[in-house]
Length: 339
Image (cartoon, rainbow, N blue to C red; front, side, top):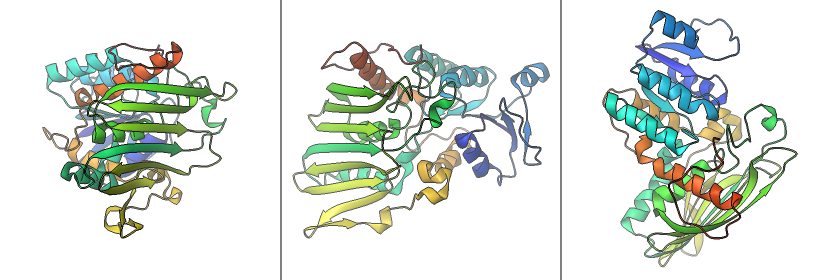
């Protein structure tokens, strides 16, 4: 079977390393850069695909964020099942078009929200479902990461038209974990700060959410830290406290016997020495295991039609920031993102 990876940056290489041992797949790569000759994959272009009418069973979209829609639409139109790196697209109308064509052609169109597969976040979901904490009073989310000026020196990173800021790029996994576990939003207020010498979009954001189920949550994210410290979700309930934290929400701790106890069974090591896996974790392998089986549904609801709401929340937040509103609700309208 033919599989193509569009974009061979950090994410594209991570997917390739996970695929190269799967002998039934012939791997192709599309990238503007001239890649070294390899017997593991073949470099190809969109023009070659169109000219020679090459069919791909699966396409992995790991190109710059602003190109996700264009590349995903191309492969869906040509009959390929598609998985798109985060953020799956930047515009709401683009998301709707991909959803419609994937339904019409009966093809997979998934996004890669790999932290849902972490042992710690999976354990968190089961604890919430079992109501082990009783009524949840407060959820506190924080991401303290580092991105320097060099990181934003490309022509697309950190720009609203092609990428977005810390919320859309780095903290989207934290926001997804919050909504996936604690429900939809009824209202919010937001503050953002900008370092225009480094990037156009926001690099620090603070949001207070009121969820539809009455839960209150706080959300803080930045790339201004001097190193990658951690992401964390701290949950306070009537019957106790849980903290999921680590570089990418990879450790699970629960308060027991007057101590916060690390549960090693539901914790993983995502150290920065692991390279791409340090930030991305081990979830991509689990995603591919499901994605590469024909007609297999995602156990973690990765279909983009299931995650349209996440994109809608992001646009509502950006509309609030750029229209200088203090309190807002989730609305179905595009913002500055992706224009």
